[in-house]
Image 1 (cartoon, rainbow, N blue to C red):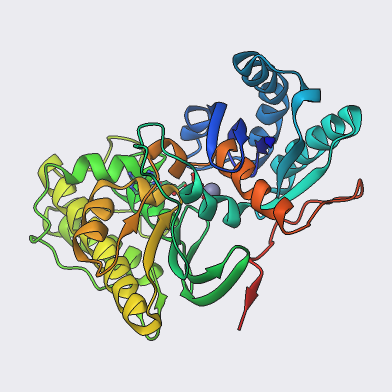
Image 2 (image 1 turned 180 degrees about the horizontal axis):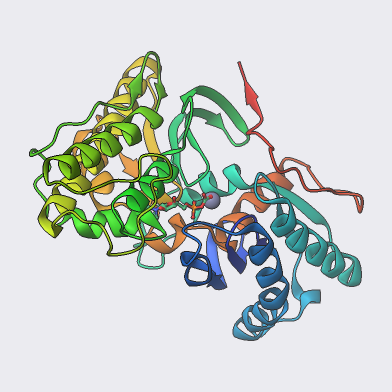
Length: 357
Ligand code: KG4
Ligand code: ZN
């Protein structure tokens, strides 16, 4: 079964053709990161307009690469939430148009399920013995908008164990990067700066909260307070109200910025790893899946693999960021459960993962 997957929930336009939920036939992502970097974050109207410009050429490219027509697809899967309304509308309406024209089923995909199913996609360099994760599997979703720990007992069966009480992990990376003048998107910038840093020079509070919950807002504030203290000590005047430093314009020296980045990154990664390990022990999960943009973080990837008592799957980097492949894969399993959208499918900006108690 060939599914065309379309993703436009935030600032990446992603299109892919995936066979039987796991084999990538063709895929493309058009990132808008550079466009938004001058605003220090995603500018929603600009994102929606850019999707309008990129989506059709991208679909054309992916079909050409596969040597296929829309009629060769068995279904069209599309992200309908959560995300930015204007951005989601572009993908959903294009998907409806294609599905209607080709008279194929339209499959509604939850973006969070998309991230989860990035672990069911066969990595391009996987060997013959590659297997999808076994159930029950513990899933850590860490993206720019979400941080969730979920026990997955079977396809489509999710039990929420905990998650963030305030900011998402990726959001914390983005905000701290802004405070340090490292630019947007913050995750890769912090990771790069941290490579030269000493994670032990500063000590920041753990984001862990009771149960399997997290709070990243206190950690972000602790970094900000530390920066302000260092600036005061150095006699630098700081803007206490709206703290957003243009790229490269921090008054602190590069080594101090690297040390702050390394200590922050360590606090986030340690908190995520400890909570995930405790959740494996509490639930008896046989496997751990990590997904979402923050799963691209090299330290998190290394520490997760080093400290879990069960095998760990983390998708290759291109499947961690938003993409059409994961939407086509999640669409396949959604379709297998008999779910199909009507022509009245609407976007849902605050859609949640459908969980059981
Ligand atoms: O999943 P994603 O592409 O979009 C959402 O669904 O939110 O995640 C984007 C987030 C951003 O906050 C970005 O800073 C973060 O993922 N990110 C990283 C890294 N690469 C991307 N965070 C930490 N380390 C990275 N290497
Ligand atoms: Zn995402």
